Amino acid sequence: MVGIILASHGDFATGILQSGTMIFGEQQNVKAVTLHPGDSPDSLKDRMKEAIATFENSEEVLFLVDLWGGTPFNQANGLCLENKDKWTVVSGLNLPMLIEAYTSRLSMNSAEEIAAAIIEPAQEGINTTSAKFQSKDKHTKSSAKTIPAGTVVGNGKLNIVLARVDSRLLHGQVATAWTQATSPNRIIVVSDSVAKDDLRKKLIEQAAPPGVKANVIPIKKLIEISKDPRFGNTKALLLFENPQDVLQAMEGGVEITSLNIGSMAHSVGKVMVNKVLSMNADDVAVFEKLKQNNVKFDVRKVPNDSNSNMDELLKKAKDELAEQNK
Image (tube, rainbow, N blue to C red; front, top):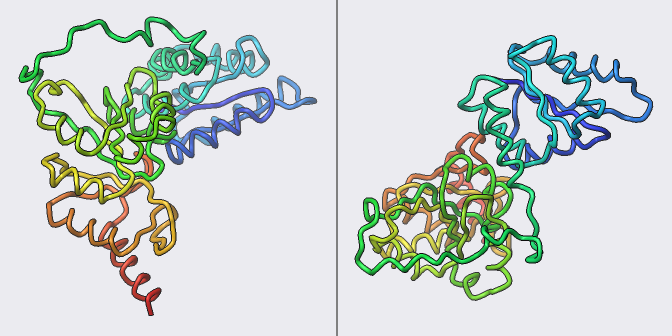
């Protein structure tokens, strides 16, 4: 696996490493090296070498630095010149760049390949909510005619690449890690309550990652879409606030065979079964009904996490709820 060095003026590299961990999970062969006032260029270079020495394989190394021409860049570039065609530097470090680098090195074996793959996502990550500066091409509504009802597009069936229960709905881990892992062309938040809230809808639509559209729809609308052959080319990442909404959608005919469980917020009457999941008796009953309908559970916050055992979590919830009701 390609090693990654994050290098910056001040603690920026350390902070973005922590941010990347929150979104994509713990990563091996990644180190942050920082330059502070009073540090010499040579001492920074030595720390880069020490960090690389900890990698399992130091043959391929990618340096992600904050500023072209700055000291971190210059020292990284000097090391790259000593390791031509194996080590590479990319400047302008931002979070979309880092997430793309993490994703790319799962399938790419060279620093140069990853460097080429991360430039465009890093650039697309620069945007603004100000309509004055938004790209007209990107936000102008399509003038394409509406596809006539009954038209079969693709295989005529909505392709659900991921169905996820997450009380936070669309946030960093979904917008980056899960989108990278599943490659949807549309994120669909399925919630009757959020669909009625114009402010929340707008915030969710703006939180969509580059190249992916986000929509908020009620459960009834998802049921209609799942039966509409015009959505045959749609690769959908579905987000539900709770398992009850998933069950309602399935009872309406939406085919969900696998369900990713991300987070369920704690509230009165619920018990914590792990750091991010809380359940009440109704949640447990719904999950068991989903299981009876042959739904497979994938209990992970981010793709790099290991899958927790849902049966054990449900048993823990039952035991703690029983104890709570004594």
